[in-house]
Length: 192
Image 1 (tube, rainbow, N blue to C red):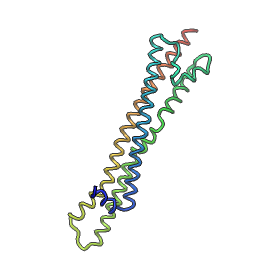
Image 2: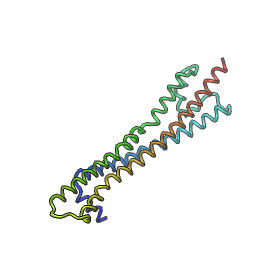
Image 3: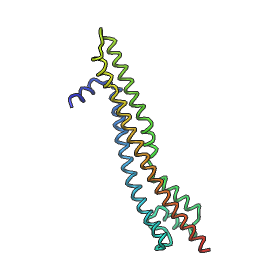
Image 4: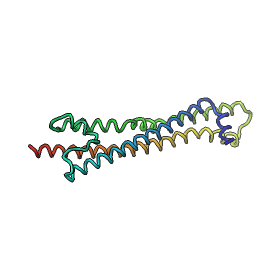
């Protein structure tokens, strides 16, 4: 704990700002992931149950808790346009935040690298004022500067992984909505 406090007291304002920004990114990454993960899982379970009822003949329409139920209840005869609009809207609402995960994944390594470059520049500036410099003086200062890059890469790994997981969940939801739409449309064409 003492070395952490020493690190912050000896670091520049830019390095501290970079680490605070990356900490904010890290928190936002987990918040977006957990929020969207639970929402997508609940919606996937609901749509899977609705699709199963359609496939087994237990129901002639989607379940009342389905994301496309509201759209279908507004029209007399279901059509492809209304079902596509319902699916698109459901996916759009369900995947809020994925863009932020993508932005965080792509920018955090650069922010970390910026912190490292500033730290190394400060190290060389301090070395320029000393009469002699040895590896024992330079190595710890540069290793401290590299912490920002490590933090940026760590945040990027989580953000990118979470983005891919949520993207897959969104695909599952889209597939379920599409399958329900096809069953509904086949029932409408079969009734004619």
